[in-house]
Image (cartoon, rainbow, N blue to C red; front, side):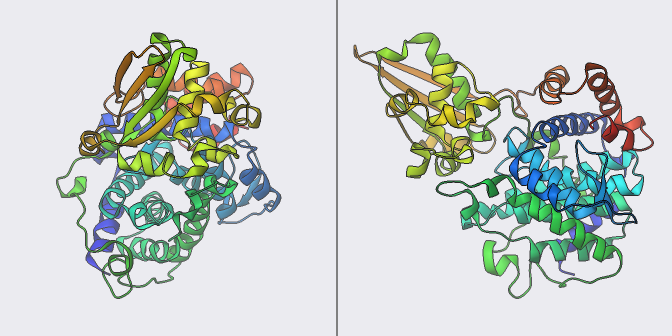
Length: 447
């Protein structure tokens, strides 16, 4: 196998729970609690609901569980349903410069449910996936080449599953290779008017990777040079890159610096826009505004403000990736909720006039700060000629401004609409995940 595949597979094969520092373990658990809340809250979204109609009860080794259900179904279908639900609200975590590593949890949970996985094994696998996701995501940065994050999810999940299942480096390498050459998808998924596939594209990478890893575990081989060889990732998409050292090589746990939670249910780059809109509405009456210019970095502008569709959202998925809509809705309502993306909200007659006051563009200083700091400059002008300048950065949930465990528990309580006693028991289970001999009880408490 090529050096990049070997580097990933050896890290994943050798990582143990005892290797992981306690602060990383606790952050991993917090991200698991957060992701489960998102998954339960959106369990009936279109992609998950449609996929559930294709699932049927099965038995045997290749089985899994879906969040919110006691059914035992094929592991790859369960992985798809879980990941689609976790992603749907755009409320799940993110890893700068782009992508949602919690998508991997959908596949990890599905496989773990069929294998009697312990809490410590799930935590270790989760950290393994996140560390690989962080390194590939920042080194390859495939979105700039027009490719979607599915390949990042696939590579990371293959590593995490390999860790969880105790596969050796050789077989993990084959799983990583199979995911690398299979899960490449186009970023057209997130361009223009965004369809329901936006929340399901990486779920498809999860579905494929669960199956591909099962094949590799049984001995199926993958191409030996998926990164560095002829027609590999380096040649076709990225050019050569080098990972930051893994912890086993003396590097840092990037979970501590690159992984972020979301306080608001919107695309991560626009978290700061919500806080900025809230600050602006305290300083001026909307009726007195003449214009508002939002200055941001390329990634945020390109993702949420560079296309005309984002200035006239006609689908939920477009609205939650629309900088002018999110800013304007927060300016009007003082907050963003899941309900902010209901059709009657993004098509409301009163929101387009506010959006028409807004312009957006890149700022060189903010480009320099990204990805370490997520920031926005806002310049508002009133009808009387006053100028109001606002600078907002490191939104709540950013690694430099972490959400507290209590805030994550509150998010879980808001999204998991079960009996209060079951919610309390679920929180107690998942926060003490390292002590649990099996994750099944926790999944039962989410159904």
